[in-house]
Image (cartoon, rainbow over all chains, first blue to last red; front, side, top):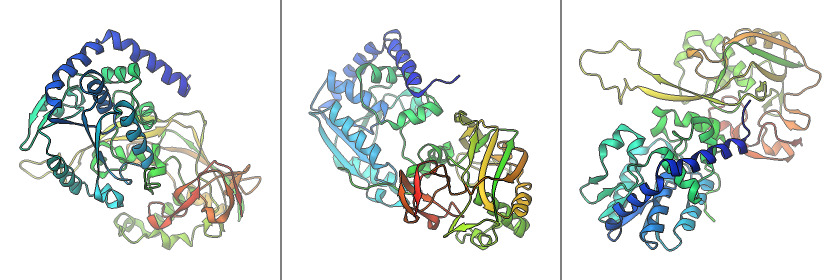
Length: 238
Length: 215
């Protein structure tokens, strides 16, 4: 027998809420906040809209600095459908209403080419970060995500800025527990993917992006997000 | 031309690259492979060769839409599952250091959604003998057939009660451009004729299994 959508979600919600106490997530959130606090004055919090960055944003806003600076990179309609982007921006505004939000849109993102020409993306993204001129960039990267991310460490010094990872020691359970406990908003598209790939592996990444072809992402997108395969949908965000 | 019902009985689950399989594209694929032989595997990528066989498809056309439904998976309660696997190069590797993270010898960690279904049903209107002949040449359906997905046990082609290749019980059985419809419940940009991978086949169409009225 398979659980219906609501039952499935309710069971997982219960599990994550139980994990919040069992896994000591409150203490981890306190630790993350105290670790990040010294960097907030000269730093900016980068928020993709995914579960990790939204949980980090919530921790920093509620425990450190409600009027912090937030940077969000809009990938453009071909890589991030407008429905999802709209949810992300609404989520950021709900979690951090007093924050100074800086949104930059990827110029090539309004063209289909952006789905396979990802080298241009890197150039545009990193030059934007450099132009922002902040000394610290706070990112929602976790050691649990991959060996490569674990190897990066909690603080990474780059040429023009320093990357700080406040929720570095969070596991996937911790992040979801925090999100469910505090009602942190996240895009609904997560449910669709989590049901198939699992809560431990679900990630918000750009859709139909050839960069992730080696992980089978565009193939899954074609089945789960088929509506966005041939079109970016309506372009403007209202 | 007569209304037909085609049922593929499967040995293994069917892996998907899209929520549905298109029956006309399946026949076009078999027909093209039959015509071209080994040359089928070295087709030019930018000039769709399927257009050449489209005229030979043993299917009725309504305007420029082939009267052939998308797949109906049975049992309908079968939920999508995930299969993860590595695709590693099976090449005569050169001597010395080979970079398998990028370039020609790159390894892929792939994930594919599959449906653990027992039967795949299609409706179409076409030449029964030719449709039957082509269907018997289908060894497997869907994606990742080379690793065992979608193996066909047997296929049955029988006469259908009515023409259900386009609409059945008021519901669209395939993508149909909305310009050919009087009313539709839901629409999305979808390919509606072979080759389905070609952007030139994409138009705003009704979504299969939603309510429509033909114009």
